[in-house]
Image (cartoon, rainbow over all chains, first blue to last red):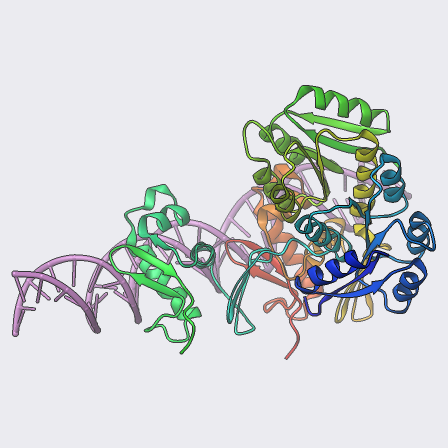
Length: 231
Length: 231
DNA sequence: CGGTAAATTTACAGATACTTTAAGTGATGC
DNA sequence: GCATCACTTAAAGTATCTGTAAATTTACCG
């Protein structure tokens, strides 16, 4: 993501606003806060956020009405956060265009996950699975490897080997285990394949292949992916 | 919508399946029923539904794994329906690509509302009406492709292939995935079709088909649409 | 029925990646 | 110092994958 996602919180309870603000900020979002419907609507118009968290029990206007009005023009995600737990209220909110509905008290982790889901859907962002190690980034979704901000060309086998090692970073993987996973159960004796491909990978990703920084040899046992900090 | 929305129910409890079937049918959906992960996966491949309701506690495979596997290719909505109510499980499912998560026992009206919400969102995927890449513009609404301000004549298959690649720009799409999406699940072995059509597309859109700028080959894996900047 | 455009096959040359062989390095122990 | 073992590196051989052209089949329309 180039820039942080911005979330507008419309809730009249100060404690909730504070809690949400802290939670969201520490999860790499930026926030805007509003205590009333009027205030919230205005903020959303002036600077449309990527997602709105809306409480239904606002002092100045009914939440369902606020929701309907927002949906007349706002295309981002709206998550309702409310003490009201009646089925009628939930159904109404969802049919008024809410993307999700959580009842208070809520679990923070779940709210964050539902925010990610809502953003994914409205931003049309796919599930991003990334492995990041300093200057090396492996994007499992797009199947690309970026080294020093440059895309790196890897063959199918090289890519499989790198991801297997990177997914288990820190752990020592035995020759047998790697061979079984990449080439199949019948190849556990072909340690030579492995040596050749580790060599090729090192040539591509190691700044100094003689003194590997990423793929370390555990003599007699196997290999370990363990990005060393540079000195 | 011209035709009824089709929902696949994957749940091992017969009573739940029956209940859902009756509820959904009386709300103008068509349904498909599966009692195991294997059965459900197969049905979704053969006849992809508009939405999948997935139980996590299946007898033959872990629901989270089923979910992840589905998300490798299935773009429709997936709603989890499970007895498991731990935050950990919910967060995991949402991050694995579920659109929503309901715990059993559930309220029918709420489920229906959440189904409507999920369908609204996934059908909205076509909110994107134009794909633009420098000198190449694909207009999905009018089904036209403009290259260097000149309309380009493409056959139906060429157009589908180009839009599939362009919608996933940056990502590597495997031969299998492309074949399944363009020709159908039964054609995953016909890589030859793909070569022929990629060749034809390149002849039409690439300034220099020998050194492709748009459609890049990932040998042994598939193709990737990734408009390179010119030097 | 004939004409046309598109899709499917077939065939083959060229490119790419994988396997295999072999020579070279360095550490360890006798 | 020499032998051994495990790993590294390079390069040749082999298999597989890819791109292209051209032939054949299919589908559609007048």
